[in-house]
Each structure stands twice: as structure tokens, then as C-alpha cells.
Amino acid sequence: MAVQRIELGGGDLWKSKAKALQLRLRDRFRVVVDRHRRRPHIFSAVSDGYFPSTVQRWLNHFRDFRRDSLHSPSAFYRKRVSKDFNADDESVIIRMVQSVAVPLIGNMCHVFMHGLNRVQVYGVEKLHDALLHRPKNKPLLTVSNHVASVDDPFLIASLLPPSVLMDAQNLRWTLCASDRCFKNPVSSAFFQSVKVLPVARGEGIYQKGMDMAIAKLNSGSWVHIFPEGSRSRDGGKTMGSPKRGVGRLILDADTVPLVIPFVHTGMQEIMPLGATLPRIGKRVTVLLGDPIQFDDILDAEGAENISRGKMYDAVASRIGHRLQQLKIQVEKLALEQSVEFQQAAAGITERAADMLQQVECGGSFGAGIHVPTRDRVLPCEIRPSQDATYQQELRSSDRYFRIGFSYDSIIISRMRGYMDSTELLGFCSQRPVHELQGKRIILLVLEMEAR
Image (cartoon, rainbow, N blue to C red; front, side, top):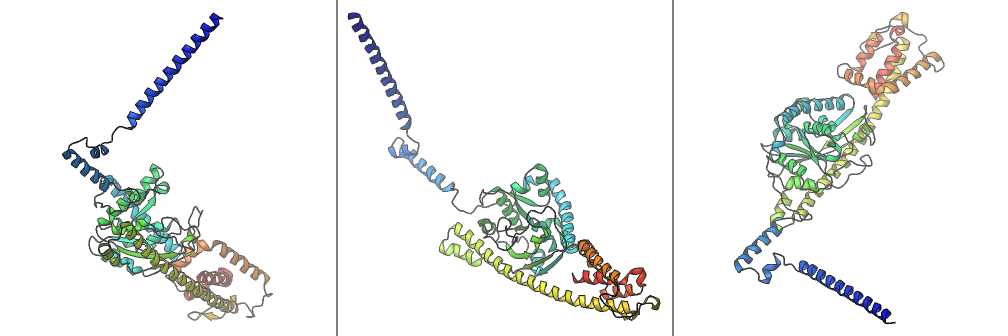
């Protein structure tokens, strides 16, 4: 019993010593943590009186300077940018490549739009006057809706004559998302050679790409921007609200730029969503508006002490309102063009029927030109069941025309500029019908003209 009692007493002793050591370690660790947490901050020590009054005053000045100079991400302020900003990145080689690539691609886009498609522009003299006759060092900013990935450069090139497209220095700078246009070194080099500036989505309006655009404006250059920020997802039916970035481009530039708005429709048919190659044979209508003024907003800044963010919003809202007005007008113009085109097509179809009958009857048209007597087809009345082979040829030729219209219209559109359709039909009538198949030629020419 005594041994057992000693063993129990020894066990309790060791347990008590271990518990005491555990408590001592825990207390010691807690003291160290508390001392670390209670370490005085350099700015809080000023108010506790650890430093002399002179040091406290200098520390207070530094604290106020630090608070006023560093802006929070949600604060808006004017950030001045020098016109030489990022000038070191533009080497002589890049400028030489731009002087060749920009005119080359611009003229190719101009030929594509006016040669393979039809572009109707209203008010283009406003852009030409602003581009060629604005005051020296006066920046130019153009804003437009965005419905297709090829709005720039295809549409921009269609608004300018080839002589202006040859001057790479005075052509536009534009912005493009870095995850779209600058994904790899090859695409980055290409877009840099055609005067495109990278912007990163989600990095706000004070990022480097926006500073580069403002630097171009400060040097008196032309910058084009899509205020919506991205393409329309419904084929241009609606227009998104403008972003604050366009407000910063206008208000933070050293000189308020000349702002020219324009709206277009039809580009969504040339390059629909998901398409890899642009289409041809389409109609595009463009309407340019008068320059937008912002004098009242600039005057209100000093008089009413409006915050910078509200000023950005006011500028963007005015641009969006003007673009919406132009959108309504350009859609009305496009509808009127479509109605006039249908009426003209109906009239030309009727003329085609009359001329076909004259060719069949050996009559004359145009400048008194007659079909040779030996090739006349009598009687002159054309009945639907008269010649089944002929009707089948017309249907097959019409089918061929509809399939190959997108390619044949290139030649016909260029031919109309040098030869009237009546002269062309007169030339057809000079040849024997069995040699030229004049009936088919007249039908194709007139239907192509109608389209």
C-alpha cells in the first residue's frame, strides 16, 4: 500500500509540474503577442507625445500630403498627360512601318467598301472640313456606334478620299482591347503598325492606354473611339450607354478637342456576329452630325464646383444623346433608300420586258439601232407557251445571276460609271440574236442594274 501511495504521489507531482510549465509557456507566448500588437505606429505615436513638437509637425505635414496625393480607386481627378508621353516606345522603325501600312490598308478598305458594296454618306463634308481645315494643334475626336468588328478600319476608310488616306500622319488613332488585338507578339506588332492603342478591360479610365490617347490629342492628332466600349450584341438594333472614358478624353486633354459624331447602319450585314470573312453586295448608310459643344459643362465646373466624376458623366451623356438622335435619322434614311430602290427595280423590270419584246420582234430602241432582218423572230407576240426552251433558258440564266450576283455586280457597277444602260443594250442589239443571245444579256444587265 505504501508503494502504491508513493507511486500515485509521484505521478501527481509530475502532472502538476507539466501543467505549471504549460501555463508558464502559454503566459509567456501571450505576453509576446500582446507586445507585438501594442507596438506603437509612427503616426499614432505623434498623438501620444513620444516625439518633440517639431517632429510631430513634420509628421503631420507628411501624413496630410500622403492622404491628399494618393487617390483612392473610386475617386475622380484630373490627370495631366504630356504630349510626349510614350514617345520613347514609338521608334523610327515603327513610324516608317506606319507610313506604309496605314495608307495601304486604308485604300484596300476604301476599294472594298465602294467597289464591292454600296456606301451612302450624308454630311461627310463635316468630317473633311474638321480633318483638313481645323486650327493648328486643335485635336479631333470622332465618336460613333459600334456594330461590327470591322467598323474600324472599313467604315473609317469609306469616309475619306484616297488622297487623304495616303497621309498616314494625319489619320486616326483608335483604341482596342488588349485581350483582343494584343494577344501575342505578332498581332501586337500588326495593330501597332496601324495606329491602334491598347486598353485593358476593367482597369478603369486612368490606365496607360487612356493616357496614350490623351497624349495623341495633346499633340493635335485625330483619335476615334467607340463610346459604348464594345460591339452591339443585337446587330445594331440598340445602342449601349457611353462610358466615362470618353468624358476623360475630352476634359483631361490640354485643349478641348473638336468632337464629330456619326452613326451608321448596314455594317452588321457585312460582318455579322460570328462571321470570319466580310461579305459583299451590301448597303451601308452613314450620317455625320454637327460638332458637339461642351462649353456649358466647362463653365459649370468652376461656378458650381461640380465633382470630376459628374462632369465625366455629363459629357458621356451628351454624346450618347446625340448618337441616339443620329441613329433615328440614319434608320429613316436607310428605309427611304430601300423604298426608292424597290420602286426603281420595278420600273427597270418593266423596261426590260419592253426591250425584250422589241428584240424578239426585230424592233429598234436606243439610238435608232435595228436588229438585222435575217435574225428577226416572227410573230412578234410573246406567249408563255411559245418557246419552252427559251423560258427554261431564262429561268436558268436568272438562277445563274442570283448565284453569281455578288461577283458580277463588281463589273456591272464599274461599267455603269462609263456606259449608260441604253448604250449597252444598243450594242447588244447590233449583234445577231443567235450569236450574242441578246435576250439573256438584256435581262441580266437590267436586273443587275436594278439590284
